[in-house]
Amino acid sequence: MPRDRMPTTELVRSTAIRTATVLGIAFLAWILWHSPLALFVTAVSSLIAVALDRAVRAMERHRVPRNAGIAIVLTLWAAVSIALVVVFAIPAVGQLQQLVVSAPQLLDRLRASELYLAIERYVPAATLSSAVPERVGDVFSSAMGIATGVLGAVAGFVTVFFVTAFMLGSGRPLVSAWLGAAKPTTRARYARLAEGIYDAVSGYVTGLAVIVAIHAALATTFLGFMKIPWFLALGLMAGMSSLIPYIGVLVAGTVIVTVAFASGGLWTGLATLAYVVVYQQIENQIVSPLVYRSAIDVNPLVILVAALILGEVWGIGGAVLSVPVTAVAQIVIAEVLKFRRERQEVPVEVAEMKHMDRP
Image 1 (cartoon, rainbow, N blue to C red):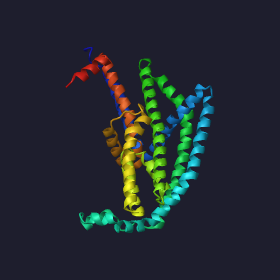
Image 2 (cartoon, one colour):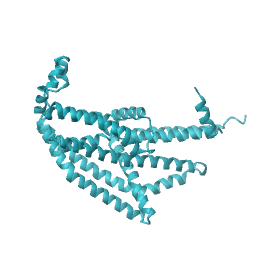
Image 3 (cartoon, helix red, strand yellow):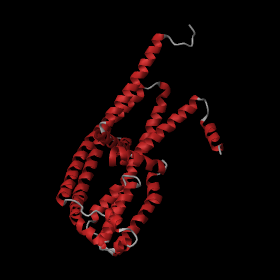
Image 4 (cartoon, rainbow, N blue to C red):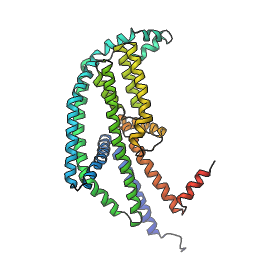
């Protein structure tokens, strides 16, 4: 028998292993596909745990035991969250309910405005009327929907809090066990990959929290200065819209400008429009590069496409997770390509020079 031919038993064994691996991956994908809520909670908890672990590591460097550091960080996180809910979220929900109640009057006022009448001269009335709904819906049902959403958010926060606590306590030993089970020749590569993902995700989550806080504070201050009655609810909505790249800020800005036109008139609407446009440019050109720095280095077009795809699959939650998912995928792909270059025995510097020399 030729030496290059594999024995029948070895061939059967290899085929069985590969088949079992493919079936296992398919079964895992099927479970994840049918568990969107559990997957979303796990992903959000992982992002928060990675971000909070930075503070825990800083305490460890100052000789604070890890368990004590985790307890301190979780206590501070819970205290700050409760304070934000009491001071901002509860009044914002009340303003949001008032906005829902006032929506029909705002729409009537918008239709009677000079801007709407001017646009109506150039846009067919049927087209313009279809863009503005005749009725917002039942006010009581809308208010109950808001209350239900608030209760669901509270329950979700409690779930995420406990999952995050378990991840902080058990995540490091689990990762160490995985790295210990790897082959000695690939252990360093996996450790480098894990560290790269950790740095990117923790930097992104920390920077995103800063951007959301800045956006919410500036929007709330501006809308309050413009004397828009629902300034707190709209300001928090503006801040939360930064969670969704590009699309979220555009949608929230459209809603805020529309409410400003309907409630404050032409000049209030134009001033709000100018603020939204100017702030967006400042965030994109100054705030985001300064906050994120080198944490996330992904092409904006890739992020936009990922937000559209994940938003289509998992809704708003998928759009929120699009940036970290894309960043992790980019890090993994870069490591795989580097491994392939090393297997081909082509130095990284030579490969990069050849790539640069291409027209």
